[in-house]
Length: 500
Picture (cartoon, rainbow, N blue to C red):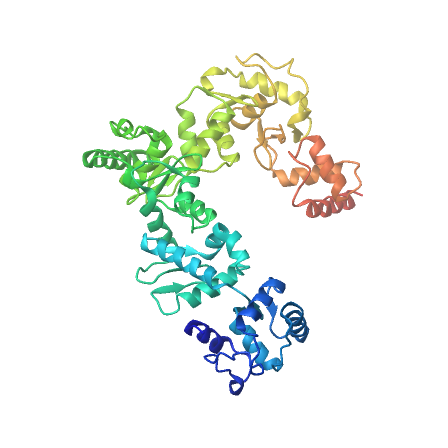
């Protein structure tokens, strides 16, 4: 009997130590003299009838095994249950209360593949990836799960330089956490090419899960995204020393003057030509990583000095001051480049603060409008009889004087926000649905107070759904939901009670 089998029995034995068998004796199963029954036959029966594992503590399983041995081999097992359990454990791998018969040739094949990978420089092998790649013959050979594989590997490499972790095993001679090991593996197999995609790397790293590769590339600053699922490594990018110096000096200068610089505005010189395989996005990100990351921060394509607070709204206002016309989509795209995110209120607030909104998707500079303020305010006064009026209540623009642009609710909102002397505009949040109210500047009502007043003056039943529906349909809200609806209802009820 091999010494590793002896080690396995001594390690996993369940019976008391005084029942331990002398497995170096050929009569290991303890049958009567002259019996032909041996461990290999027990293993064959286990493999044939208990491919999903043998529950070692189950009397029913023991009874079934005895029956199968009698039927298949023609001999009865005369061992006690305790000694039979010891024999069964010697036949396979014990995991979670079950014994799995793993053939010696299966273990030899596992060892051969792992040894080959380690000799070729593989530093980390994930149990899940190894099992997935070889699951057909592993399962047939009795390795029915990753957990069983983990136990077998722990046994095969028990006294070696291999460290076993929860999800992987690795050569302990090389330090570092999981991320560091994955990074070294990717660099090891990268080769001479500039660009590699997820699938190419997964093919070269069969023992690292695809999702691990994908996650790491997306989070590591040293691997630069080029296009869909495709990356390069910063070591593959050519930027001369003087080019780096020039980029750093320019960035310091511009940031000192206006607080930020866009990567789009940084002259690339010969960098783009030298790195012709890369997209412009990859080049911009590489320029930041190699030249600017030490002293600057990046927000989308906008670069600021470390420690400086990025004020996206002010940057967008400055951007709007330098243009004559643009669409809302232009502003949204610029904000996404600026911050890497999309917050519609930022570009819309900037557009309203500097430009004039002439339609749902159009802004122009002030020079493209000619407002006759006194005349326009007089017309608005014909609509606003009280302190306020929903913007959407202005249904006709026939009486409004010509202003170089076609009148609509978007233009009227812009006018009331910045140009009117008698009226102002307010709303809970900027929107493209013409929600909000025109309010006399003499009124001290806050917008929340206007909502309460409008509900109290209505003939509504004061319950939440009806109130939210009224405010939406009347044009006070841009959606049928108001977070403070319950509070509003209570306040409106109190007003009605006082008036009665």
